[in-house]
Length: 140
Image (cartoon, rainbow, N blue to C red; front, side, top):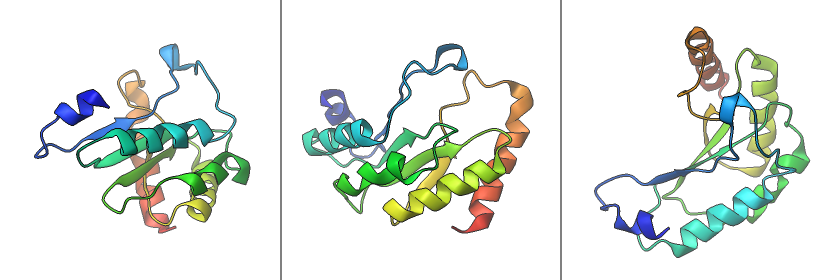
């Protein structure tokens, strides 16, 4: 958070809350978004500047209410965009289910992949872009 305060206001500031994925394997599988909500709230309350966005991951096998329910405890700020990392490779039904469930707990949010693409197999890029297009086109 102290480093975030050093970022000039003219530069967007965002945080990706990662639970680690060396070799594309997760270090931790969260039971729900509770810890992520605590971290997001702590970041927001500790910053002395605007937080433009926050991104958090959603595991591929989580589209249940229990995973998303702690989001009701998120300190909302209309100036902070929330990006939900619920897009997974070649999983349109799962992506749709995760969006429907996220909508129950967040009024507005953007979608993205669970994590960055730095270690993504280049063969998957077109499929991931298609997944994003389907998510946006679904208008959930």
